[in-house]
Image (cartoon, rainbow over all chains, first blue to last red; front, side, top):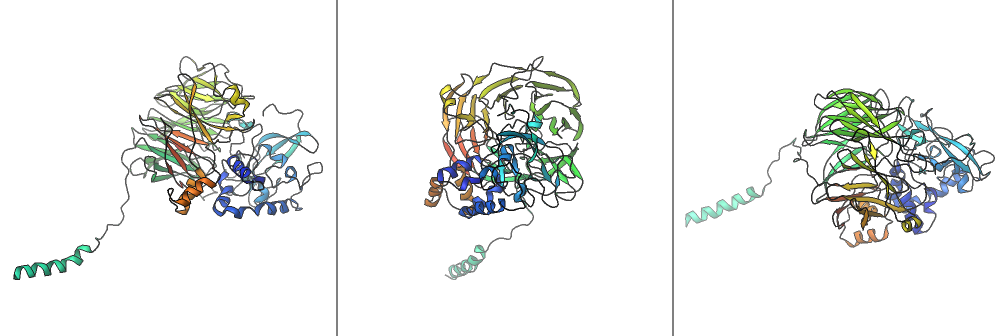
Length: 192
Length: 403
């Protein structure tokens, strides 16, 4: 579905200034839940990153040949810096019981969605990415990620990551988002 | 002598009785006075509510709930009717079951539900929650629908019935544009006005020329009403477009830039969920600003720049208090004036301002909030002076609505 701010993942890796900067950038719509644990527990959030990286190397989160290495930020499907997440806005399903391409148990993937275009740094090609929402449970609340490359206001609905894309499903209750490769883009999208 | 002794004894006996607490009545609830200019609704996406605060002292007054959804809770107001309205979605089994969309009507003094109107189950739900509803002259409430096909539901507040649904293919949102008119922004870079009749049905519609580039430099949804049918929208690149939804057909004025070339070169940009606010009487425009790149249009900023609409000049910069500290102080019960409170403000990374609102009275208050934390920085809107924080408004940030 959609939310909006970037570079959540490695915010706690850096020095204080980077923490501050990412704090400002990291959140938005479903933002706060992802943050709440951090805010309430303070430094307790620090161990989350290694855990996430360990999970990223897990066979349950397969990436395709031709994607960046999984030990890099651009190749980690549980990270906000994952290359496919250039325009995602929501909780990453891989942190919620699903993967970056499948929904968590008990939830239903929305068939109606919006498409972004992200550049795969491994092969330098642009790909059309489908950001489907998984629906039927409340906010997952984990691994919130919001990046907005090519996002447009809601009067351009098919270009808007703000919209709750749990439409056409049995309920419109939003849980998390996946990022599926639809195909190579014929050309770079004009929106920046 | 005997009388004096009797008096002293009587007093000694009476003293314990007078110190005893009185029995208190059960079942009482507070009522609010008539709506005041410095009140503020603060939304909370996680708690699915909008809480009402007195910005004059930071005290919480009450709250309204919202139903299911990802978007912000935005109460609509009719002062004349003494009512608040929430458009919401509910399911018969909580997060599942049969969906019902409705407008819940609250009495503005008791905050009790005084009625509801069932509307088409198409209510738009999005993360920003801006411009999804409007009240026209205390008579009609508009609810924007997006499935993603777009339409507008019209509720007659007099009869508390649904007047109808107006299809608005290609155009979205609702902006009040007169007693029986509303405006929209369209995906082709134009603006649309739809006029209603006395029954709330469509009477006419008209469309402007294309005035913005929806691909390369779109205007955000987060416009501010200048007066009547005139609104100001700002584009991703910081150009202000004044749109008049009135007249024979909507029109726009020549855009002007909120940024100088030097400021642009330094990377300053507009951004945030409610990145604009306007005090209509003084023409003071407030804009959240940050330094960032082309995809940062949803990022809030550490500064709020103040302009006067008349000469389009930047006149001041307002910096919020530390909104992270404002949130955490309330949770932890730490006084702002204490050493620990001071330390928190000095050390904690400050959340950026993404939500702005301003009251419209003669001594206006400027409210600065963040989507990241649940705290609000309150300022004198004419001088920019920081007056107080509203601490721990909930668990998450959300829409600010100055009713």
